[in-house]
Every structure is written in structure tokens, then in C-alpha cells.
Length: 339
Image 1: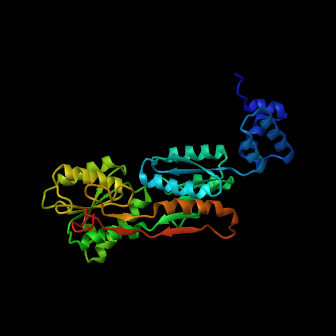
Image 2: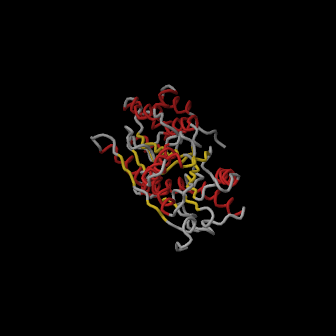
Image 3: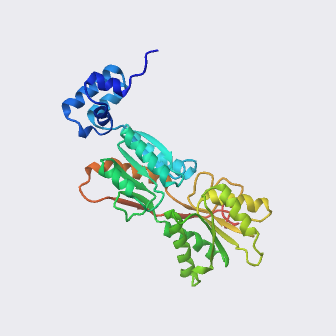
């Protein structure tokens, strides 16, 4: 087999340095037109990259977009990715997806990798409030759009009114007559957790009750196993102190809570009602269909990709799109709800 051509081979044929080849591949605006054409000709001659990629570099337009979400294994983010993909496909673009696992160092590593690959832009669900890496990436010429993020940001963003969503969830439980309500919630580093808590407390205040009446049950990960653990801690409480209504920060956590309650013989919703958040695909398919707060998940991804692709056409400041969630009542909180 013929050895695979290297960057050094391209540099030798084009009579330039390895650094110049790297600039042509990653930062073509830094290289003069004549030098860039010579390097691209060498790339095509050696078949260092497919001819289509060389033509893409020659045109200066990337055909890929990168996305970094908290956990691509969560159906919520899988559906967001599908929304992104559907919008990109209309422009003939491809999507690269990575999970940050709510780890800022991992997030930064993927940002660097995407930049090295020369993506047209990056769509990110941020791990936390520090946006300095995104600002640096933008200054180097890569577009950034934040997904499911604070609309006050200086970046274009797509978000959902999670304060309103949290209020809907707890307001529903209050309306159903629940006096003792728990909120199974994730880390304060995740904006959605903070906003949903604010909304939950606001619903109690609107009902003339103290926000301190809300029992917050902390978890470290927003997954099914964390829901199992939270349910076990709730069931370990004295029965006269145990909440009769549980609001979960997302549907995966709610699934874990439901699973443990049912395994322990707890009747849902007669003994304990459960409300989730997201309305991912399985929510209405469970043995006890899940009451939840519906987010327009596919639309979030589609709108984020659309913002990214339209950034070059905007002369004004960053655009923010915010969706309003809605309550979907099912049998996990209302025994009379339609299955």
C-alpha cells in the first residue's frame, strides 16, 4: 500500500512550511491567495484530502457544523440533534455531535477539536456561566450559538422559559391538592435546574404558601439512576412527612422515580404523584403515563441551526429565540387523565 500523504509531504510539494499548510487547512484567511492556491493544488495532487474537501477549502466554506450537548444519550438532546440535522440538511451541511457530560474541560476539548476541523460554526449547550472559551472562539472567526441557554447572553441563543415551566409543574400539583411537594433537582451549575427551581417556588408563592415549603432533593446527575436514588431517599422519610407530589427536573429522573415507587408498591398517583420535564418520546408510553412539561425539542435544534446559518446576514446584535413550554397531564398525576 502507498504510504498515506502527510502534512510534511504537502509542504514539500507546495514549497512552503508545515505551519503554512496548517493555516490553509484551519485559518485560510491568514494565507495569501497565491500561497493558498499552491497548497490546495498540492493537496489535490497528493490526495491528502478528498477532492471535494479541497474544493471546500478553496471556496472557504465549511460543510460541517459542530454541536456540543450535555449528554447525547439523553433522548432530549438526541431530538435536539435531529432538529439541527434537519435544518442543516436543507443547506447540504453535515453535523458532528459530542457530549460534554457537564464537564467544562471536556467541553473545551471538543471546541478545540471542532475548530481544528474547520467547522462553519458550533452549537453549544453550555456547562456553566463561563463563556470565555466561546468568546475566544468567536474572536477567531467561528460562529457560536447557545442552545437551551440564557437569553441575556451576548451570543445568539435558543432557550425555553424554564421558570414558567417549573411554575406550571408545581402549580399543577398544588391545584391537585398536594400540600407536601418535593423537587428532585440537579446541580446549580446547570441553568435549567436553577430556573425550574425558581419557577417551582414562584408557584407556591402564587398559591399563598411559603417557597420554603418545597422540599428540594438534590441529585448530581440528571439520569434514571439518580431518580431511583432520590425516590429511595423520599421513601425513607416518615410517612407523615413524606411528599405526596414529586416534580422531577427532567423525564429521565422522573422515570427512575416512577420505577422505584412502583417497585416498592407505592400507588402512582394515588399515594404519590409524579411530574417530569421535557416530554421525551417514552413519557406517554409508560405503564403509568408521565405528566410532564413539554418542550418543543425538535424546534429548539432547528432554530439554533437556523440562527447559526443566518449570522452572516445579520448586521444588528445577537438574536434570541425563546419558546414557551406547556403542561401535559397524564396518569402519573391525575388518575382520570386519558391514557
